[in-house]
Image (tube, rainbow over all chains, first blue to last red; front, side, top):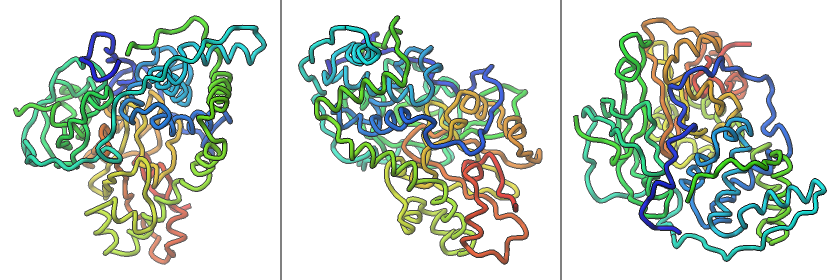
Length: 230
Length: 199
């Protein structure tokens, strides 16, 4: 199940990639918003914080699990609904819970007499991180230097990625060499850490949005694999 | 791993959370004390006051400000602030000429050790989608008007680097103590969607 070649089944160039999408309306700041609006949100947060440990996975797999939720639920269930869904997904993927176990238990809790699926065999990924966290030391010199012009690849990703659609194919300038990190695109799928240099790349707004754009610079951290020299 | 198809039976989130908790407790996979500890920590102990103290110290001590801009992670650790979602902190200085504002378009990445958990507006679609496309308009709607010749820089937090804005110190605060200064600094100012104002 894990550490295999990526297949079409993991295509998720989906709703989570929101940069530049339109129609969402005004940003409203609630006054005195509590950290958790409901007790269940607090629980969802705590389960999410423990999800990598419970499932034997990692932070990148967690984000990938959030991104794989159905777009309707991604929006309608709200932020902590996404956390809840990702925990379910990770636990099912790792064989800690059966598919449908949560729904069956929910139905039981609301008084329906339903059978619950038996626990599956545990199937956690054959994966051990080489260090805590995402930062790594990399022996090779960075491919790019501050001031270099780079183009973000236009790849349709085969799975998880941190290269948003609004930057793909566009040309920017390296403004900083950031700490090297594991590559989410492979780390989320337990294929490899692929630790590599990361660059802060500045894009002029007109490059991203056309001549009529406001005047600003958009800077984003892009992993080495996402970039080609320009 | 497949994308999760939308199930036709999709019980409400609160009930699913209860169901998940019940399953995990039954199997001995979670310790309720650990759950409560995590919730308590992020409800009560880790929040924007941490970042406000960093800002106030930077405003009062030029040496600290310098260290903060050179190595944010180490400088905030001097005050005891470190932990999840703070592996590498980079501090962006707002001035009269340069205005920085931070987002995570792909999810909700946010410097937890300094600001706690992010507020709903930061995680919702309107901010995530629009701040990288029309920042001046969005900031104007949020009450912050910037001059045409201000250099506006939007930062999308796509890696594990966490961006933190050091707001510009407002006029008329020279007599204030560090504590009083910290009380003025809002989380909105430390994300870059507002300036620090006198009450």
